[in-house]
Amino acid sequence: MDSRIAKGMIHPEMNTLIPENELTLEKLQNDPSVALISDEVGSWEELIKNLMAYLKLPRSGRRFSDYYSVELYGCNVPAMFMSLQYRFKPDNPFQVKETLFFSEPDLYYNKKLFDEGKINLCFVIGYSGSGKSELTREYEGDGIEKVELDNIVCVKDHYTLEDLKAKGDLLYSFFTGEGSKFYISREERDVFADHGEIFVKFIKYAQGYAASHPERKFILEGIWTYLFFDYPSDFEKYAVYMKGTSLAKSKIRRLIRESNDSVDQAIDRLIDFGIYAMDSALHDSNVDKWRHYFEKKEATIIKEEDNNFTRLRDSIMAEINNINYHFVHGDAAAIEGIMEKAKGSGEMDMREKAIVVEECRKAIADLSA
Image 1 (tube, rainbow, N blue to C red):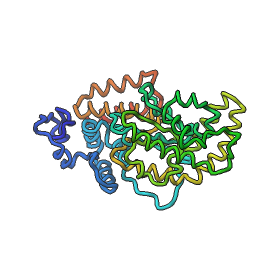
Image 2: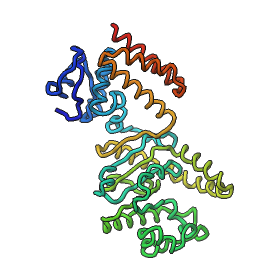
Image 3: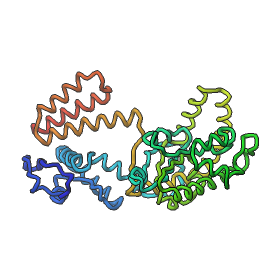
Image 4: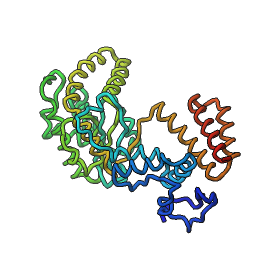
């Protein structure tokens, strides 16, 4: 039996607790009154089939299914579908540059292995202003050498060689060694020239450097990895974290942020943005290719961007899961308590309050049926 199954569950037909030694995952999957989506689903067709079986159940059946799903997987059936759809969704036969305008969930590939130290190089990829630094905040203070790839262009304007040495051996060894020709200022740079060479050279150098220093960890942040490397499969042995924030949203964020610091700096960034956006538009099919490649990997954790909508949705879902828990245990009084608490809440969003109260009413009516 799967160890994640709770010790006592209620059978949807008998409405009695079944002892753990009598309950099996196979028994649940073969019960026509229950429809689950397993984390072992193997194809898009199987995923859709399981979802349709769930949707065809009467409301009480869906409540039992959601209860079991939460016990097994920590989320209800619709949330399980949303999580797994990225792994199995069919590739679009038409080239659609999705991430230019539409935000998608964040991806964490090989996070567990990087956290455990079994992988020591992590690429954090996303548009400038997308929140890459926020994504890696958990690694602050761990002695990990972080490099923002945006800053290696015209690096002389940002850091002296002494500054580079203080930041870490990876940067210093590159710019005093095989990358010395890239130690230049803005005045020395032709902004209209092909400036992808430095990113390709540095990333390849970092891969070799990390391999020769397995006792240390390195994080490289920047969009440039998948703009200038066509094959995501070449990065399978590393950790890859990908922000899903769209180009348009990322740029607005950065321009607002930097205009508060300096008008001149904002103007410079606006000029750079024209070049940057052109690069992104030309190579954005790579961005989507990388996303579609890694989101299908079992080692990838998918997490939606934290915003008001997702926070509201998650809050509502938690309340519904609580209602379902009491429903399968036949506890109408507890559901009434949830409803009264929601009615009197001064913290709940009005939409959340309306949905929770309505769900409580439906659950109580179903128990009385």
